Structures are given as structure tokens and as C-alpha cells.
Length: 591
Image (cartoon, rainbow, N blue to C red; front, side, top):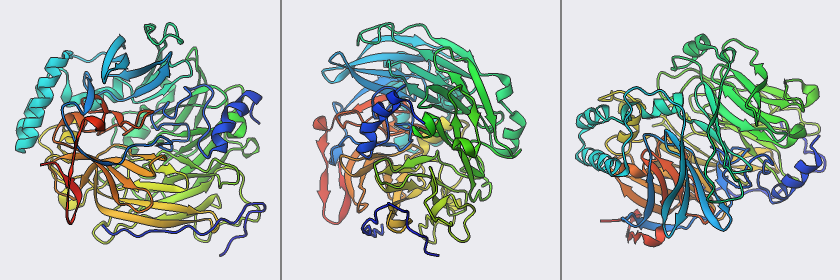
């Protein structure tokens, strides 16, 4: 069926595709108008005025930045990166220009650290440990951490998985359970507030740390304030039955554009909190007993600043947080829900059935289609676009789809050698493009690990074991209201980290490999139009550059800056060695 065009919507020119084999308050309107005019997501007036103020970069969860990241091919050197070792696994890091100084806030696994960046190195201004109960934990100094990653690199270079497993299990800083400790008692999701304060959430609690003087770049940090999440938010039985987790946990955090802190749980509840006192205001629960929230969510300025886009394992929801903090699913208030294909629960590789991606918003400028996108639960997942605001005039939906809210969907087909294509990573959106990656290893490549814990698995993948392969780019065609396949690559292996899109470079940046053979990781940049490799940084088996469990990000000047399995890393390609290009080889050499 050819659906009627939207009245007043311009018919855009057809978009070329490429095949590569291998009611808002006045203040809110003023603050968000500039970003919307530029086609970028609106900036939340209650968060830092930065392209990176939360886990997925922005409220729209696009995992993208307008910043230009340098192209080119480089080999890592000793001077090529500034490093702040973490305590175990540290995840969030944020930066801002304040009083003429570049300032960073980094959660290192047990403490929030405030840092300046001076003459190519990080200088600590203050740190605030948070309350944790981790039996036997011994914090190591930087020298001990350096010896630790050198030992781990030696095990990886030798391919000694059993030796590495024994070493990790014996470490006094609880490396074996570092990922699980972070989820349970550290920080999983976080926000960077408009006063450059920090709000973090773990399995059952919240922590807030502010600057004593928000205007002073050298201000000390205030004492942490805590809030335990109410027990009635959690449903352990539902989570045990529907996921591989033993108990329910907070699994998403955000801020509405009308100023309420939001927390979602695996068990299918979402709650509002006062952003200052951290006191709970209201709760909403999914209607069906087997529904779960296994990802984060997006927020926007729509619906009077209260729009929240959250997906369960069977439905995509737009909920609306009202002015008093209550949460509405009433269509009369602007809310909606739409079923999608939840698929089946796979034995490995995914938390549950349904989507593995945080909903991502697409379309922000005047006249652009306003969409929210995710990947569904089908064995070969589909990229699904929902109309996120009003349905187009005369829109009757598409035959065979589960809801008229679905604008279009397209299968992510990587070829016959990939019978299962699924992802636990969000869709990366830049303009009208949507980038997805496969997180599933072929069954023949799955074998038992020599020890317990996600940290060990993160170290081995890409170093001694193959990574999941396959990435694809799609473009939204506004003239036809259809997805178009742009390109795909089945030779790109990806670490379990969220990539990002650099608008200034028209490039997707990820952490992974080219080819299935393990032996060292790269930071890779793929041209968004063609899929061609246009950037690479070879980091080998050095675990300091393994971005597993985090998200690859960039600083305001385009330098890659993100947290890894061993700390906060800021790259400087001007101090790296150029890689050698070789005839017939796409990936330059560093030997």
C-alpha cells in the first residue's frame, strides 16, 4: 500500500544508497529552539549545556556529537594517550569548559574524581568516595594498577586464558567481579547536571555529588547525598523468570524537560523523583505481567517537556510526566503505546526477549519526520521506526505490521552465515542515518570461559577470542517514509561498547577489529556514506584501551575520550605514529 503524504510535508529527494560488501514553558522553548533549528536534539535545561551530559550522550539517546573527530590512521605510542587508572571498572566521565579551564568528572569505580587537563595530562582536584560494601576490596595506587595491566597484557599476548583467569580471580581490587560490583553498588547510568553536578544510579540506590562552588573550576566536591530506592519498585520474581538476572535492579536514568529525575527498573516500573531532594514522586508499571524494561530510555521537550520514550520487551511507549510529577499513559495527555515483534528469548547473548536497544529519537529540525527507533526481537532483528508525535494525516499504517504507529521496519540481513542477528547496543543516529551492530557470536564460536565474571570475558574477546561481527547503516527516506539499506560490513568485529556518530566527520567510531581473527583491538572510524575505513588507532592487546561495557565518546575538540576497563583515556593523535598503508590492505600496519 502506498500511504498518503503528510499535508504540508515536503517531498524530499530520493536518498542515494551505497552497497559495501565487506505545552512547554517559555524558558524551555528558548533553551531548546537553537538546537532544534540546527537539526540537533534539544538541550535539556536541567542538564549541562553539553553534547555529552549522560550515558547515551543526550536526552534523545542518539549516541552522536556534532564535533569533528580527526580521520587518519595511527599507531598508539606512550605519549599518545593520557590515562587516569580506575579502581576497578569505572564508567561515566563528563567534561566541561569552566572559567577558562578544561574540567572533567570521572567515576572511577568507588569514587567521583574531579580533574583538570593541563599540558597533556590529568591533574586531580578532588575526589569523593561513595558508600559501598565490597568485602575484601583493596584499592591499589596508580603504580600497582600499572603493574596489573602489564601483567594482564602479557597473559593476553601469550594467549594464556587459564593463567589470566587465575590472575584476575586473585586480585585484591576485585577484578573478577568488577562489572557486577559496578552495576550493584557503583554507577550504571548517570547524569551531568546544569551546575556540573553528578547524579548516579546503581541497582538499588541513587547518589548525588555537587560542586561546593559551581562557578569555580577548582572548587572542591560536596559530600555525597544518598537515596535508597523503595523496595516496592522492584519485582525480583518477574526478573528471574524473564532474564538471566537473579534480582530486579534499576536499569535506566534520565531527566524530563520539565525537571523530574526518572529511574526505570528491569521489572517494568518507571518512577519520578524530585531532582534536588531525590524523594520519590510517582510510579508507573507496565500492564502485562511478563513485560520488562531491559534498556534505558529517551526524553524530549514534547508533551509539555514530559515526553518519555521507553520500550518494554513487547511494546514501545511514550509516557508523559505531568507538571506535578505523575506519570500518565493516557492518550489524551499525549501518551501512546505500540506493539512490535518481541521475537524469542535466546539462550545466550541477550538479557531477555524483545528489543536490546534503548529507544533513540530521530528528526529534530523543522519539517523533519519525528521518529523514535529501536531494533526488535526477531532472530534477524529489524530496525523499527515509530512516529513519535502525532500520526501523519491520512496515515493508515502498513499491512502486516503490529501497529499503525510503526512508520516502517527493515530486516538487518548480514547474509546466510548470520542466521541470528541481534544486538544489546543502541541504534546510533546521525541526521537521517541509523547505524546498528550485531552482538551475537556464531554458535560454533561460543565456548566456555576459563573463569567467572564479565570482566574476564571482556578482556578475552578481541584479544584471544573472536568478536561478534557485522555492522550495517540505514537511511530514512522522508519522501517514501521508508528505510533504505545504505551499506553493511560483515568483517567488522565489535566490542560490547556503544559506538558514536561524529557529525563533523560524517563518521561512525567504534572499538573493535577488522576480520574475525583475534589479536588486538582498534578504534575504528567508518565513513557514514560508504562504510569505508577512514580512521584507525591500533592499541593491540593493551587492556587500558579496551572499551568493553562502556561507550566510546569524544571530547569537545574531537579527541577520543572515554572510560575503558582500566580507566579514563584521552587520545591525542598528534603524539601517535602514523600507520603504514599497504597496497591491497584496507587496514594500515603498525609493525
